[in-house]
Image (spheres, rainbow, N blue to C red):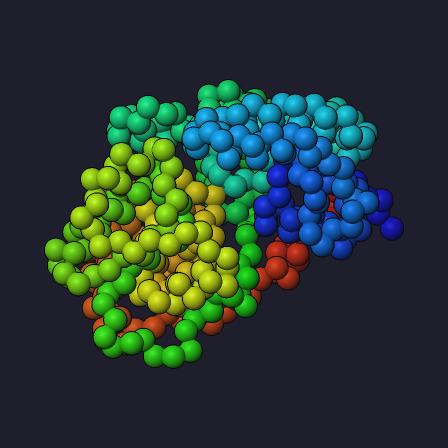
Length: 383
């Protein structure tokens, strides 16, 4: 039997890392998880964890007391401390899974002692990320850089010690291939969707419901919010009773721009748990996300699973799942007019009774399938 050799070294928990840890544990390949949270990954035994909650507490305190950008920058400043602690837990022969700038020393140590390193590609290559979003921030006279420059430098430095990229989308893959990585270094994965919560409505669409457009993600320059808002304005000129549903989660980068669209009839909601989020999606007709940069945006996958057509850009990752005219449309980045045109075309289809066929979608995005995919990728390194 293979000895446990994999280490998951990330400061905090997300569904992505939780899935990786659970899959490795079930395969018998997980040695330990290194986090700065008080609790480990749910579904993974406590003895598989080593925790440094003091750093997590500092990060939490900054999030509660500082504006978003300074709080994020403070959290990034804690990463080297986490990394130094985590590197001390890495043993010769360990393979390490982490992400951008979290575990540079862990990656170096693993490679020096015969292990391999696996980067979770939750965003595009850091050079691509930085260049694209720096241009966007300049376009909107945003005083903040896309992320703290020192975090960008850490992420770039980490690329020197990446053996493999766990890539969730063609967009991420291409950004690495364009920067010298080989196809053999790309291990395609995806982020599952809880299909018990995100499923189509069972009742017919109310005939008296106005055309309803929804976006359930955050609002920022990275997510193309200025083009989303301008598209809303253009849609209203052609469909005067259209309504718009957004999540009240603007970053500092977008707040000044958001104020320019205070005339729009936007119905706001706080971040919702997944069961409530599924309900909200089922009250809408169309999902729109014109992001400039995403690894694989799960909000769009949730919308497709709920039976909504989606208008996305090629930079969302979820565009890999779009069949134009059947379950959505792909528009260029920074193109509000194209969004509005496609939205109005979808309204005509919806009025004519078009429904998104979600048959087979569950199989493509299930945790069972990710388990098969990830174990197949990692099995050669488990012995």
